Length: 130
Image (cartoon, rainbow, N blue to C red; front, side, top):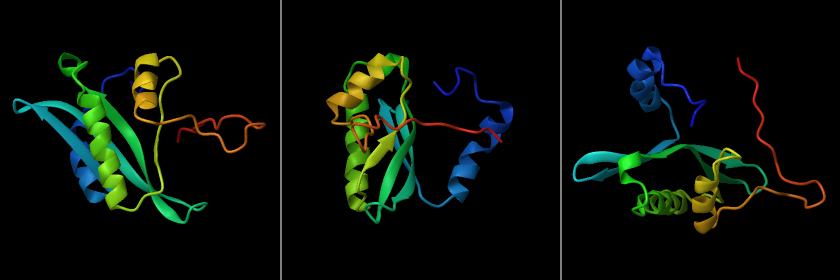
């Protein structure tokens, strides 16, 4: 769902090497009958409030032909197990407001909206492209 566009030729050529060169990258790959079926690409961050690491799921996908088989839940479970091994205080992710299917999945896996203060409302994710 990353903007609805295909990856550029540059990204297709360089992504794996770029990920390998970075610290704090954690990837869960799922295969069904030796076929790539899903993935979670996570980046380690740090919570200053908890003074502990956190794990952000930056990319999460299951190939269409492997959906509705419980694979997404199994990938999220592996991410959670890994986050516990890293002594993370939480796992974070972004989801598009209109992606109700993904929201239902995340809710079923005990993810919730990020809210520090009920009166101030939910946290919003913003960006500035460079």
